[in-house]
Image (tube, rainbow, N blue to C red):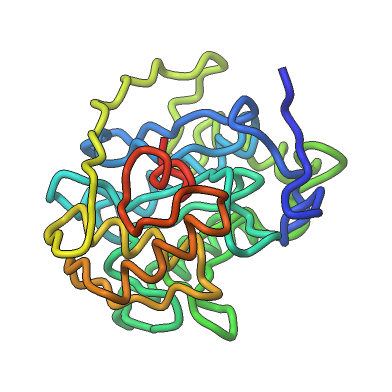
Amino acid sequence: MTLFRTAYGNTRSENGWRMCTRAACERIYVPGADNQYLAAMIVRSGPSEIVLRAWAIWYHRNVERLDLYKAGVGDDWGWSEYNDVGNSNHLSGTGLDFNATQYPMGQRRMSATMVAKINEGLRLFEDNIFHGRNWNRPDEMHFQLNHGTASGDGASAKLIAFAKRLEAGYLGLIAGATTPTPVPTPTPVARPTLRRGSTGADVTYLQALLNRMFASYSKLTVDGDFGPATESVVRQVQSRSGLAVDGIVGPDTWRAAGVR
């Protein structure tokens, strides 16, 4: 079983973590959320999973619900096999996007109250989590393990110690057990074939996903309307992925965009 890989010529993501395969990851379960909408929240196993799961739970309890988008598709994302940003932390399973369709890249939409609450959480997590809002080009949906949390092919002593404290009851987020709580299997969400003229929640999901995964050339308005601009981006994804360039989003194109 292969756990590590080179992605786009990089062995490590922006935060210093080793690039990994899906086999090195597991899905997060958030108590109290509708986890069928969180099916794409897949992260690196081990102390990284404990800390990112705790952050997701804290955010869900204290900032806003993570299953906020209730139209049949989820917009909370983790590990990905592909990404237009070649050193993306999603490629190492150490980044999460929360309620992504509501927070387009490059914009600051969160209220001052939300930002203050998130900053309180970041302090409680002792610099182990970084918020993408703080980049020069804001990315409010994005949270990741911070620099200094990786060592070699795994977690740093700092992150391991923090994960152990969480398991011991710090912040009351992780039910201090050495054996993880069994994770319910989310209900699979069927991905329909989309093409020009399609509308609705699945198109909204697709547009937000394209903007996230292929940020250098996908600057779509997330409006749920599959028009010429969306088709143009889809054709670029297909061309760069070696697929038939027809502008139609079927199973192969969904996979190229990181959806399994």
